[in-house]
Length: 361
Image (cartoon, rainbow, N blue to C red):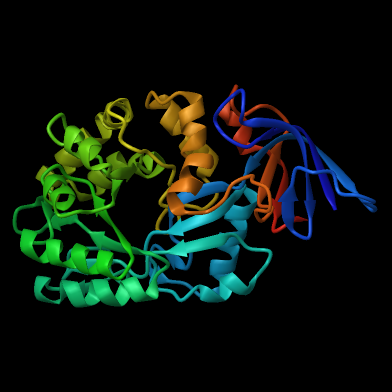
């Protein structure tokens, strides 16, 4: 049995969202002191629900699918960073074996990316043409855990710049099919032009969303479409632009401009009440375990510390349909040595990581 005492942060409300202690028994949370408790281990500090990385890729690296040992290492790295709930935003690997491991984070999968032919990173996605989009969305809706991932835009080699991947009619039909099957749809989008058609077609979330503008921000807010900005990934845009400038100068300039206004874009989205969640895009070319860094990036973009913290904890868990620190909930908890509401940098140094009721880090 575990006894966690100090400050248990059950929600964002500074008055009603803080308790002095809780217990873990049988792998679950209780706020009632168990009768006759023995062999109790006490952990002190500021307790949060396990952090959420709402955009990462377990089972994927820069070259495509990885073996089970590498996927395990990726998941363990997330765990050590306190990320105990992962939304895997596209992977060619079958990682369902992780669900049988009590020592690894919980994963919500979006199946495999669905991209236009030769319009995405090699070995990552199903690469198809628009007439097959509905069928592949249905396939991945059944394979995933309630999410499907589209590649909404990518570089068009003919124009030398970012361009939308799917015709309006096909994407409307595909999103409708996903919803019929009980899945939500998200899309990778860097550019401006791909956003409005996807939102008007009924999409539920957009990854990166660097192309948000004064025209599309109200549309996102009106429809309640969430964004996962992945600012630690957007930080790589200048390097990507430098590498591709000789062949695609128009694209390189576009990427630099999106990077330059990244903080203003996310800040404006938050100010317009667009739901914003924490995701790192780890697992492609980025290392895992960057969730604390991404929370800090949201603060730099203008989000209050409380909002950035919610985007990785209570708010993100509610959005994904998973419990936080609630009576009877599975005990996925991270304990810190200082108050992360005062300084989100505290998230970079977990004191204890508790997964399914066991101290694992």
